[in-house]
Length: 428
Image (tube, rainbow, N blue to C red; front, side, top):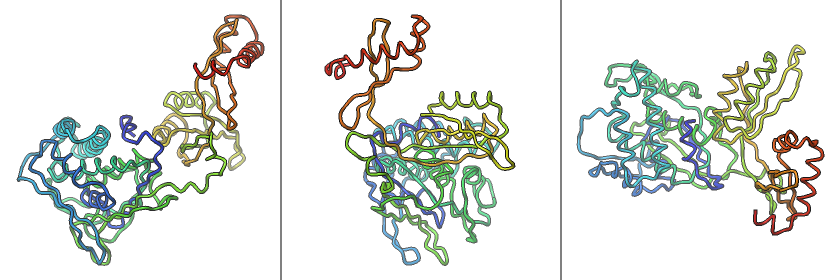
């Protein structure tokens, strides 16, 4: 995930989840329709898009039926134009918008950047020179920016999706006749699960492909976010309609808005005085990596922001001694951790899990002794008591400066902590 996308996710403890079910593929207008059907404000979306220098644009949502099922169909009207925009033109429009918040701007630009990378590769050019055709049209710009506004307004913490059907056959684009999926769509979906289908139409557009892959990387684990619905409590379900009528199935995108189902968490995790959060656990088994390689990868993982890294000896098939490298990281950092493991070790595959943690509240706290200042962590226990642990690196540095043993320094620091008054602990 692009590092700047870390600012897109809500900073609170939101557990809201969006799950995309793409039976008939995904496009920008289908996504926007489903999000509005869930409850995203059409007025806020229209105001945001208009503030990009498109005052004459109008957006309407109408309830239609596809194969007997109701869905929202989005129509975007604007004066005719023939401009082919470059990436920097679109980014300037987004940056100049006065009715779009920073999180939505960041997400929208990430979606456009993904499309630009794919187009540049397909046409053998650079990001600076690549220009958008269909995706650069006003209605596509409105779809992408509108989706970004809608998603960030819903305070989503996770996005998952079913595998993506692309359709098969041929279509005609500005560059002529091409097979399905369209070249840019195929490039965008590299590395992501696609689903087989016999439908001879374009089901997934470049815009739709860029939206779902960016969302699952920003609010999830990229490829690991594709599969059946997660454990959650559904609250609202939205349907967005495509323009074509398909034989034998409804041409709609279904999005479910829910909240994580925390029933699996032990009751004591949610006790008063104990915090909880959700993190990613990424693991790989290495039977052909030397210790120096693993040590180097461990340092890279920690430098990248991993919460913890540990190694466990194991015996693999054929009796080979091996090492399990386990990494704990924030969910948004999971794709980066995966890349480091696959790039800087001999791993050819990793396992990913999402786990809930129960943790005691803690903060930095130092103790001043006759031998020097000792920083550490002050932990609040469930009963309100305090526990303090000195920092190992600080003890090691004091050992070198004073010549005292680490055992002595630990003892002196703990004795000083125990003599601290309650006011000292509260004011530091």
